[in-house]
Image (cartoon, rainbow, N blue to C red; front, side, top):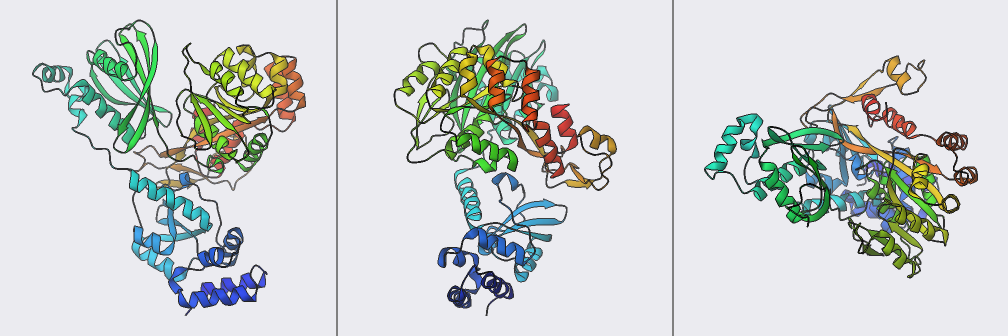
Amino acid sequence: MIYDEDIILAKNLLALNIIDNNKYDKLTAYLKENQTQGCTEYLTDGIGVDERLVQQSIATTFDVPEIKLNEGDIIIKTPVLSYSTCSKYKIIPVSLVGVELTVAFVDPPYKHVIEILKLESKRIITPIIISLSNYRNLTKVSKAKTEESKPITSRFNIDQYDVQLIGIEKVLDAQKIGKLPPYDVLLEEVFIRAIRINAHDIHFEPSDTELRVRVDKDGIMRRLISFPREFGDNFGNVLKTKAGLNAFEKKKPQEGGYTASFGQQLVDVRVSTLPTIFGERIAVRLFIKQGKIRPIDDLGFSERNLKKFLYLLNKPSGLIIVAGPSASGKSTTIYAAVNELNMPEKNILTVEESIEYKLDFAGQVQAGSDKSFNFADALRAILRHKPNVILVGEIRDAETGIVAAEAALIGNLVLTTMLSSDAIGTIPRLLQLGIPPHWLAPTLSGIVYQQLLRTICPNCKVPYTPSKDEIFHLGLNTNKTDLVFYRGAGCETCGGTGYFGRVAVHEVLVIDERLKDLIYQQASIIKLREAAIHSGFKSIKYSAVRKVILGQTSTSEIIRAFV
């Protein structure tokens, strides 16, 4: 017996000349013997049908949307279907909005399978279709995460030492009688709590009375815990020692770092100190080491911006800059770009202060900001090895910028990052660093600027009709009455915020001949912007508004980020 859906699909494939009579007979014979296996795997692996044609045919035949599913699209915190069910039917639960569960299928959405999923999940099932390779890549990542990650366990609850909960005196009394854990252990618990809530920055902020510890989660600062002010020096000593800093230097800013292990997670810890009147403020940035580079089409680029970025990457030489504010995902983007350029005939070399991903196809050089071996020194040495592609971790000083421009000028493709407030504003920043305009103009190929926006929690996402005021703020036509926007109502998954995770928004500036002339003339930013817009440049707000229309983020998040 063959399922009705398989017969319908096979006949359509035959009618569209995607398979011939011979392959049709092979397919039906296979399905008679392997009824529960589904048809997609045999179509692609068994008889060599292009998987994109299979995906498109299933979607068209059964009137179901087809998509390229990215890892970031799958946001279900609580399992709603068992692993065995998902594996058996080659499905991936994607999102849960109210009682509607969106499920990605590789095979046709069989009626009997949908009924099984309804019974198990107690939800209404909305199918979407993904390709076989898309499914395999996602399940490989999921399996790796399941096997490699173990829960990070705490030794104790640090709230018992929170002065805002129990008072300063009780915490100091615990210290006096020896009931306070060692400071390195206490500090580790702070890190564990921050990592558990996916915070990427920890700030130790001394005041007149207490040491406030705050974290930056999804771009929003929030209090984590407060200790007696006296704890600040002890925490500082522990962090400085681990980061290779001078523990006795308290009057000058210092920067350093180290790698720590929490459970199965390796974390790069960057430490920065700043003297204040109440003691040293310490900022700690956490970089969770990722084993796999994300594909470039999984980074939130619009189709338009992705085409422009790939156009820049296909150039044989030039300087490409990924710009943005601090902690905006610049490193993720630039590694994805280098990974896109990975070809046997290319010699790829990198110079980085902290190597976040180990690349088996590139020579990676670690250099620091100190005088002994800095980025500029490393770049000069790299040029003797005849690279085609050079990744420079960051341009932060004139010397690095000049050598990077020189490397592009002599025929290398140079990719780097830079702190900036927008794409066009990056140009005067490069000139201010001291890169000669007659070098920058011919070498600068393009600038990708990005920011991160919070995404609406899929578990409490609700639709609503936007007001004319909202529509006006987004620059849309206020006469449109059929617009539907979304927002998060707040739930346990998102901690009541209505947001879960973040998505990147971009603007991509391709430097054409008119812009090169203006750079050479050191024209004002106003003239640069006018020329860019005349060439079709769309600002980052345009991309952000598209995310609102697509239901990924909210108008309030756009206003917070851009107004």
